[in-house]
Image 1 (cartoon, rainbow, N blue to C red):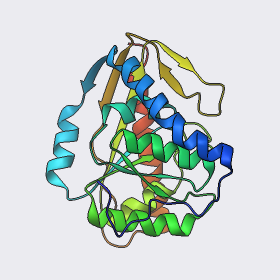
Image 2: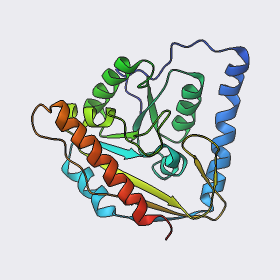
Image 3: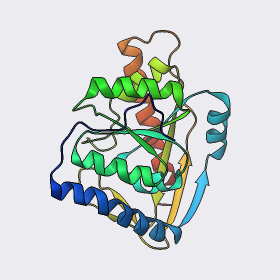
Length: 229
């Protein structure tokens, strides 16, 4: 669900070719993904952590690695999750993909429009319960959490829920994140870790860095636990 006080648009002006791609590609790709992933078998672990986080806290940040975006977004489709994409053409394309899955994308990034993105995410934390975040996006390094999640968690006093995904059979893109596209009839494990609470009060820079490192360690440990099984 979109909120009127939040910004889902981009100031970028796109070429005619880009506009046509934005118009026609998202429905085609999402239809393909729905068909593909409907053949896959999902297994959920740590459901009690998800239930606890949703029941006990008014707001929640869910952190994933960028490479698991496709399977995670599909699994959490129609959840009303709010996330973040850049102002760029690729960001606009990603936002339209997400919208068709029932996930909304605010605009801005850590590399472009960072201040605006921070403001939008803080506003969103007051208006929606669930916010998703690719901790190593948009350009990596792979499986290294950037400082933004710790800052947002500390400023909103909301916990971070690590969510890992393991796919037994997948195509891997030749990109920095090795984005995973599940193959037909793949087994996909969706695992939640324990909610990670921000430090009380106004967090110092050292406390935020400790939180960032804890989130990174927890998510990587969760991946090691489910990968290869």
